[in-house]
Length: 207
Length: 158
Picture 1 (tube, rainbow over the protein chains, first blue to last red):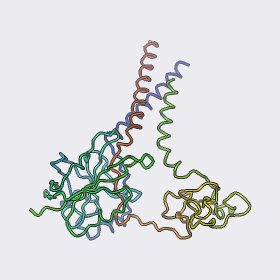
Picture 2 (cartoon, each protein chain N blue to C red; picture 1 turned 45 degrees about the vertical axis):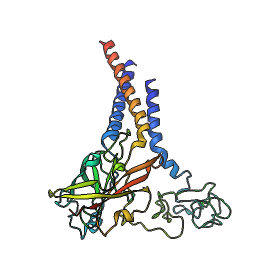
Picture 3 (cartoon, each protein chain N blue to C red; picture 1 turned 90 degrees about the horizontal axis):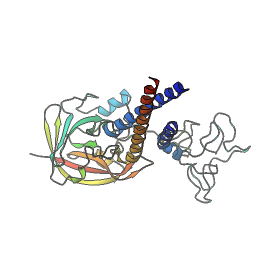
Picture 4 (spheres, each protein chain N blue to C red; picture 1 turned 60 degrees about the vertical axis):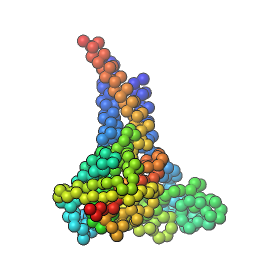
């Protein structure tokens, strides 16, 4: 009888330790990404006509690091695609940022979009926690794998409802823009997301 | 007591992960039916559970979703309105239950994936702080209590 009780207690203790480990990992380190792998044919059609070779993450033209001195951001740029809902995926770490790899390369004509987390699962600050502090004229730098640094200057910011149409965010074609996105607004428990997104737009510097 | 505490922990976990599915579909229909309208795709029986099938759309309805514009009755043909047809998680594409268009009309909204412009990313997890803290503290307390019990039992055995 005693042995049986000890056996069950040991099992439940191990389970509790596993739950503890998962909660800590998900809360502090592994951000939910929900990214899906696209079929090869779709992947090819999305990257056709671009300078970037499909899924080649270390292409010389693709972004490696994002630096924003004003808000002390110096983060690794991961390359993200789509979630199964058709949204832009996010980096798997709360400290990294994610560049939408099916969109524009930073520095090319159009909008290069980079997203970063506002906070982690314990409401502690993540990489874009101070994105709202950026002001017009602030500097942003993108380092590429090829060793080039592209300089952008903040143009302005705007908030969008989380389900808003995104054509004007992703599909600007006129100038070389960098678009930074993070969450803002209140939390919607049923949807497990914030009600709004803060979108900061920067223009490529001519210097 | 130890087991009881752990059951509470499991309830918290399962409850938090089950919310969305409960909201998405609160009513069930006979096999092969995505609503209470028409006939079952598998058995051929009326989907409303009676001997006579309900017409494709209720009065004042242009879809099987929501409520009638004229009578205020549920358009699903059942006693409650539905947000999505059974076998659908949005209004796009077809039901996995009976192949009916998920928008509740006669013609489905085509699936376009990936879209030309993706939806906005989900870039925050701070709203999970309460749940994460409860889980963290509960599992920590249970792990500590279990370890202490095992440590004492081992000592007694010696």
